[in-house]
Image 1 (cartoon, helix red, strand yellow):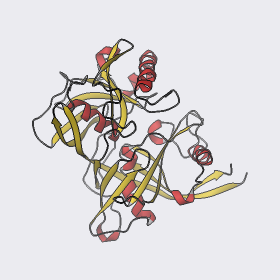
Image 2: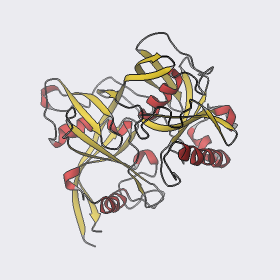
Image 3: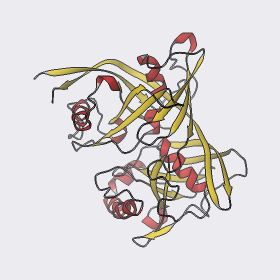
Length: 358
């Protein structure tokens, strides 16, 4: 077997992990690129035994970085979601957790220069057009991974990475509510189809016969739940203008319940064919926007504050995720200026991934 050696940095970004590549080291042809990523991850086996994946949708993610030609951004971030048990790559979504490591990886690769004890890296999401400012700790012109910041779903502490999201309404569809309505009935269930950082279909957990407080393991074992979710998701995806989404992870799915532990809401996030062990960063921005926008399925469930910017805490299976929203509502119209949150990242190893030549 002849193999090609491709430089990469393996990183944990937020509550996800995967290889981060310099896009210049990868094929530009999309079909050829997909085959390389499938081989690198080991897609097509539940354990990804022949690649660097780890048998879960949050560990089969890929970031590809390059210098940006955008007038505002420094770095372009192109994301790929590689399937676990299928030889399939979806280039349509983005991932905010993997984004947590993009600034650090860009500095490690030399794509962006260091600048003092903190370095601001301006990132453009190639997949969605979102603009994100990442603040990375860089004392002595090195990326620091040591610190006291902690996030639920990751053991221990690490250096903080601050992410400020801009230009995220209508990330994929061009509209806050792609169907033109804040809520509607799909398969007899009231849902909100919303697109902020990540297109989502959001509903109340009780309407799907669950409490909304279940563990990831309990959710993953509930096959009837996933069948019901997928039936609604497929129809909602078409209504959102996304076409046939049967082979796409977009739109994602969220189920809401009243908070149990003093947060703004309890929520469960579906990727969409497995439950997320915690909560997606882009999903948290979309879910928080659903709470703040008038007329959605979240009305009557959420604990909200009059503060501006507004802190939103989403309780999830591993704890909670906090997002701060700078937003306005005028004449019933929701507008999001920025959404900011704290994440962490850690470099796991750097070197070459060896991929059979395809």
